[in-house]
Length: 85
Ligand SMILES: [Zn+2]
Ligand SMILES: [Zn+2]
Image 1 (cartoon, rainbow, N blue to C red):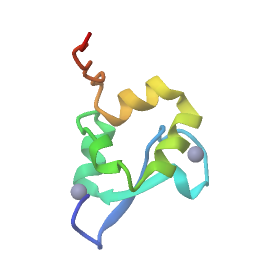
Image 2 (cartoon, protein in one colour):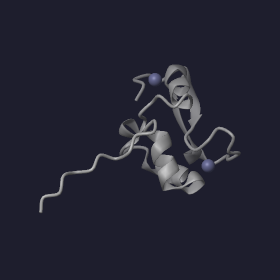
Image 3 (cartoon, protein in one colour):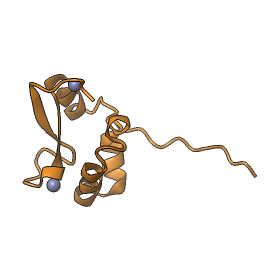
């Protein structure tokens, strides 16, 4: 998502206090994005889908679906499609 290949740091998707060595626990991103994500300002999910689905699933395993969703979208809730019937 960063259009870069150097200077990337691993960002823990679930929580940085989670002690987990699994490779799916982290996604590489630049320091700027990592800071924004940790501060809760980055809507990361749009960049993670569909390439980083393994990592998303791993995050859900750690913190549950709702917490993972809110964390990866900076607190947004899914938009509800208007009912067609
Ligand atoms: Zn970046
Ligand atoms: Zn993990």
